[in-house]
Image 1: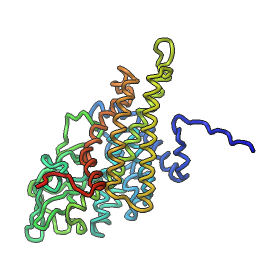
Image 2: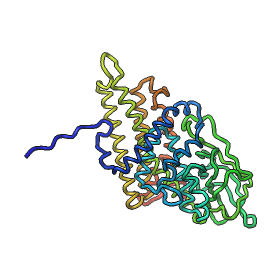
Image 3: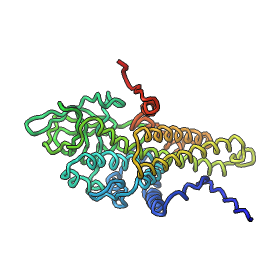
Image 4: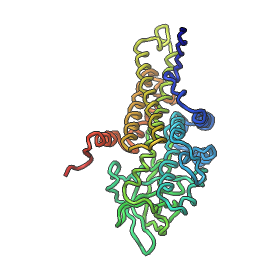
Length: 398
């Protein structure tokens, strides 16, 4: 009996994860990867340094043209792709920049998903086809200046005035806010928390952009200001009743982050590996030193474990759906490990690690935001803790 030849190791895919993907999934991944390489990569460091996303509307239309907006939703002009397809897209987008993935994620998994899951047929037909095409940009107004991890304590209100609704309040850290055409806003009513589709040209609505960020700089981040914003009765999302509705939207976005963090980590790891092979010190490449190889080996371990976890959750989501705690497993682990990979990559690059000539410090800074948005590490820890023990440990014990 002859033994089979030992397969070779591909440094880019040492566990052979690509073999677990279908041809269609690889085609989706490669389409997004090429778009990022051609359209975004040449400019992203400049946009990050300037703290702007100057071509956001053009990018949205181009992303819509390749089916990337709301791609995991079905009907209404959406591509109807799988959770794994969407995850692979998020990975490639964030390998380019977290801000670009945020634009797509907020559009598809928050604003569009809220309308798709909880809107009326009229709302779906009015908004979703144009949002899928990138002709209309959406944002998602849940977080408030004083209420981040505790959205149930929101102060934004919606009160009845005849058949109309009057909205008052503030939302903070809202991606896409200043360029949005429609804002999905969550507000407290006499009957509990409800969602509203708010056209941003409605009188009383304003979205000043937040400046002076040192993270997600190539992303539009805004405050939403609602001063006596009058909406007709049909602006309310009829299926969104209570806090479970916005939290289900957050779970959709968190799933994309599980994959996206892998992309940022991959970019940092590949940069460090290439640099270590060519950076010569003491007469040889630093990749030949034991301490550097230990760093690279540990980075590769965590990177590809995170990739496998993302793929596993994607397969489960397509087959069975995911429990929120399972999404928290992925978000907590993958963002934490991606940050550690970026920090380790920065040490391999030495002083060059803080230069925008390389993507490492950009990814590291971006991931500091990814670590706390869509649920802080502490909140995901408590979600997992409650799932394991059956005992909630959030907030007051009184």
